[in-house]
Image 1 (cartoon, rainbow, N blue to C red):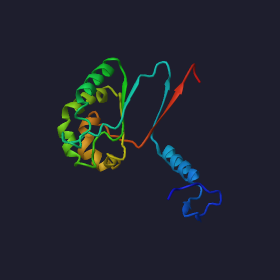
Image 2: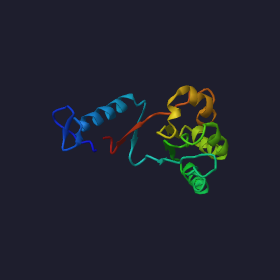
Image 3: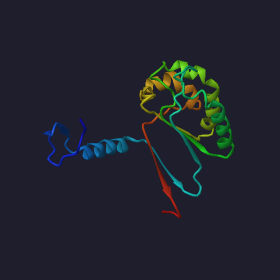
Image 4: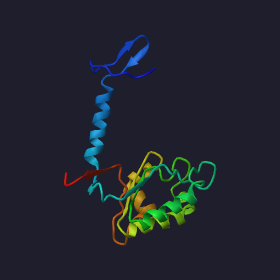
Length: 173
């Protein structure tokens, strides 16, 4: 069966296929709720913006389910380059592979990687979002328990967001 939008806003059967009412409207409403809930909002001049975004590392426990282990060396080199060049680091979710292991394991396995990312944290050039494979970070108590020492400076409250909005400006507009 496949889902198909229907203007009548009700479920109907048609030739053995489910026609779902107003699928696009539900998606739009869901995205609008996310947009309204986002607390990370920034504005930056497009010519001055120095942002690097990484996503879907899927850091595990250095086993077969660990997608990051083969990329670690090049990622470390990239972090060094972008740090020295003054970029802000955005980690866009699925950083840890929490479907395959408990939070403690990837954090222990990749402590050296987290230490490199901490350089960005110390200079206020670090933002982190959670994804479906590390959605444990949507819970503040889990962030406090496992990530706080890696993603905050002394006295700060750790923040892992569901999304971020960056407004780009060009010539003041």
